[in-house]
Every structure is written in C-alpha cells, then in structure tokens.
Image 1: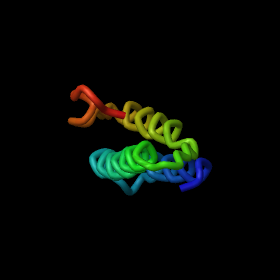
Image 2 (image 1 turned 60 degrees about the vertical axis):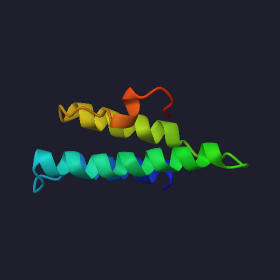
Image 3 (image 1 turned 120 degrees about the vertical axis):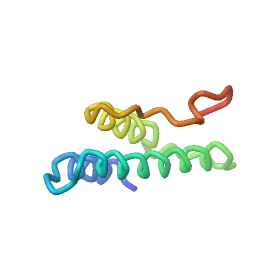
Length: 82
C-alpha cells in the first residue's frame, strides 16, 4: 500500500464517527499486523524493498496511542522482532 494511502486510511478510521473506539483499534491492529507481515517478508527476501513500511508501522502505532490503545504485540516482547 503506498505511503500516502496509509495516511488517508488511518485518518479515515480515526475520523469515522460511526465507529466505536474498540472497532477503530481493531481495524488499526489488523493494519499493523499486515504491515509487520510485509516487513518480515521484506527481510526474508533476496531483494529488500522498504517502501516506507517502517514509517507506516510508526503511523499506525501513533494512531493506536492516540486512541489510548497499547500498540505492542506479543512479538514485541520476544528477542528477535522487527
């Protein structure tokens, strides 16, 4: 997903008045897992192409923090994580 589209997607979720905070957190967590999967795949590839994936993860984490949600995943507590 292009970097600018991620910004728009995050903003759309945060500004959607019809979504509960729990639903917003759920949607952002799914986006976060997708980005983390993309990061893992890129590091395992012979041709690593960052495509601003790290920035996308940071933006999602900031959006989750804005909603007072803990953006940490079980992987973050392990020894070798992205």
